[in-house]
Length: 260
Figure 1 (cartoon, rainbow, N blue to C red):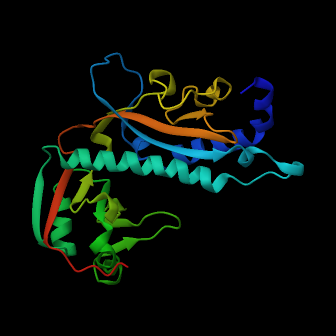
Figure 2: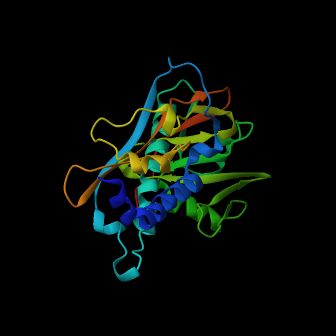
């Protein structure tokens, strides 16, 4: 691609990538962890969450001066990376040696009794299938409180503690409940400059400045006429779990699913 051709896509492309960065920064769970971005040792093993899609070039042209609204798809792309990061974090915790508990059934008192064993539980991740309706029923029972906030997942209230409830979708194949203290989980995340470009495409240099100093890395290639090969990714280490940073709860008698 010649530099003068890049100018055709500049405004629409800038809107597209800015929306991706905005959504990622707002929704990534990593921003709430003990995040390390300056590091010297290269011995640590890193893992990437990446997606590769084809984007029509016309998507970034505003015909007759009318801009195409690309905010929805760009936000969805960013959330796909956020979900990948979160699933990697949760599966890493499941494979770790954090304390594991087993309870007979999923009832409020038994559940809260286990969660209260942590000094500062901040988040609980619960498999959507089959616990969705069961959790929401707590909001209508005495002494058991769920706080609902517009646009956010609910809060579980236990005395003065507020614990954010997150749903784990069935496609992750995670069956156990995971409780975190996010302040005690350390993770390293690379920036664009610290990571290697993908080998699958030859990135267009005119677009590389968008990812400068960013954790969400965007690469545009050009293999097929009329399309951009778009790769977006993040690169992180396995989490370092301090004492009392997480627990795992296995429910022996899980309720039947009411989720369709």
